[in-house]
Amino acid sequence: MLRRHSPVWLHHFIVFVIICVSSLLSTLPAFTNNTFKLSYDGNIHLARYDAITQALSHGSLPPLVNFIGLHHTGLAMNGMYPWITSTIFIIPKLLFNNPIVALMVGFIILNFLTIFNVFLLAKFITHKRWIQILGVTIYQFSSYHMAVLYSRNALGEALAYAFLPLVLLGCLKIWHNLANGWLYLGFGMGAIANSHILSLIIVTIMIAIFCFIRILRHQLTRKEVSNYTKAAVLAILSSFYTLTNIGSLLSSNLLMSPTPKLVPLNATKYWQALLDNSIIERSASFNMGPINTFLLFFLMIMLFTNKSGLWRHWTIATIIVFFSTFDWLPWQNLTSTPINMIQFLGRLLFISSLLLAISVMYYFDQYPLKYKDINFVITLALVAVSLNAVHTYHNKTTKDGYRFWLTRDNYVQTIKNSAIGIDYLPANNKHQLQSRITALQNASVSSLKIKSQTYNSAEYMITTAKEGYYSLPIAVYSGIHYNVTLNHKKVKLANSHALKLKIPKGLNHLKITVTVNISNYFTMLISLLTTVYSIGKLTFANSNSFARKNKKRQKDK
Image 1 (cartoon, rainbow, N blue to C red):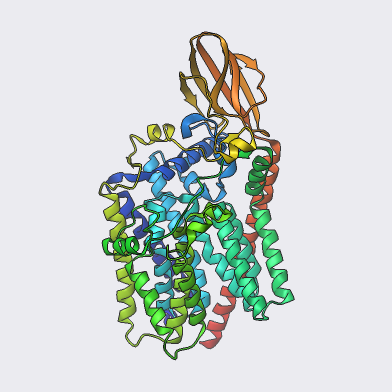
Image 2: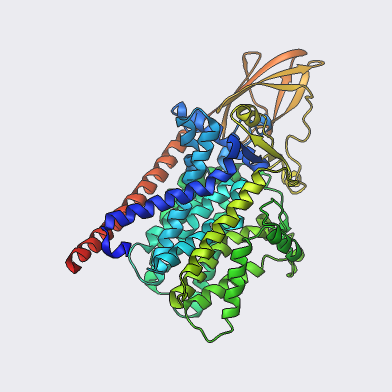
C-alpha cells in the first residue's frame, strides 16, 4: 500500500530509516554499559587504526610498519593488512574524543553498509518487500556475522562481508546481460581487496567456479568475458595501493604467514552452539544460527518435492558449501597444502549465509507464504535470537582466549600494550621461513623498554651490561627507509632483518623513524580516483533509474 500511494522519495526515505534503525539494533547490544568486549584480533586492528588516525591527522599516509602496540617491533601490519575501507572506523576517531563512541559509530556505519549492500542484491532478486526484508535479515543477523563482528572482532573480514553482496549482484547482472554488472562486480571485489586479502582469494575462487560451471553449461559469452575483464581491471585499480604494498613487501622480504592450519567444523559442537545460541570464538563450532540452519534444512527438504525454479540451484550451492566445512571430509590430508591458509573452514560460512539468503528469496518469490505474518515472525525471531547472542556474549566471561572489556579510561593503555604473534615478521633465509623462525628469534638484548610510540617512530631505552654488538627485537624490512639514531647519533643499519647495533655499556637511547615512500601517494591516488569514479558512475546510473521509474509512475497516475 505504501508503495502504491506514497511518493517514491518518501518510500526511499522510509527504507533509509529502516536500514539506519537496523544498523543501530545490530550495534548497541555490543556496547552496553559503555564498554566493548575486545578480542586478541580486535586489539591488533585498533592498534593499526590508532597509527593510521595519527598519520592522517598529520596530513600523511601511514608508513607500512607499525610502532604503536603490537610488541613495538615495527611490524609491517599496515603494509600487509588492507586498511582503506577501514576508514569507516578511522574517521570517527578523528571526530569524537570518546574512543568507545568512535568505535561504536564505526560499527554502525559498517552494519549500515552491510544491510544496504545486501538490500541492493535483494531488490534485484525480488520486488516483494517482505521477501527482501527476510533475505537481508538472514544475511545481516547470521550468528557467524555476529561472531565476526563481536567475538572475533575480525574487522577486515567483517568489511569483506559487507561488500560480498555487491559481488553477487554484479555477477547476476552480468549473467542477465544487464548494464553496470561489471561496475558492481569490480567495485565489490576492489572493496574486498581493500578489506581482507584472504576473503579476496576465497571470493575469487568462488567466481572462478561460477565461470567454470557456465562454461560447462555453454552459457559463457564473449560479452560476459569482456565484463569480467573490465571488472578485474576496476578491482585492481581501486585496490592498487593495497596490492602494490603487499607485493613490494613480499617480493623484497621473506615474511611469516599467519599460522597455517585447517580446522573444520564439528557437527556435535555446531549443534551444541546452536542450542546455546552461542557466538563464542571456537573454530570448530562457528555457526549460522538456529533459525538460518532451520531454513537451510527446510530448503533441503523442498528439494525432494516437485517444486522447480532458480532456488534449487542456489540451495544446492548453499548445501555444498555448508556441508563441506565439516570434519566429515578428510581435511586432515590437506593440512600441508596451500588450502591451510584458510586456517578454519568456518570462514566459509560468510559464503553460506549469502547463498542461503539468495536461496530463500528465490524460493519465497516463486512460492509465496499463504500467511505473511509467518514472514514477520521469522524475521523478528532472527533479529531477537541474534541480538540476544551478542548481548549474552558481551555481558559474561567466556573461555575463548584473550578478552578485555574496553572502556574510555583504559582504551589508550590497552592499545599501546597490544600484542601479536609472528605474523608478517621477516626471516633471514628460506630455511628459517620454513621452520617458522623469525629474524627476531635470537635477540640478545634483555632490557629494552619503549619510551614513546607514534605512527612513524618509536623511542626505546636500552640497558646493556657491556659494550658490544646486539641484536634487537625490532624488525627491519627491505624496501622501507629507516632513520636510526643511538644516543642522538645517526647509525648505519647492518644487512639484517633484525636491528643490529653496536651499543655502549649502560643506559642508551634509541630512536627509529620511518618515512613514507613517495610512490605510495601515487598508488593511493590511483585507488582513490578509481573508487570515486566507481561510486559516481553507480550513483549516476541508479539516479537515472530512479528518475525513469518516477516518470513512469507519474504517467501511470
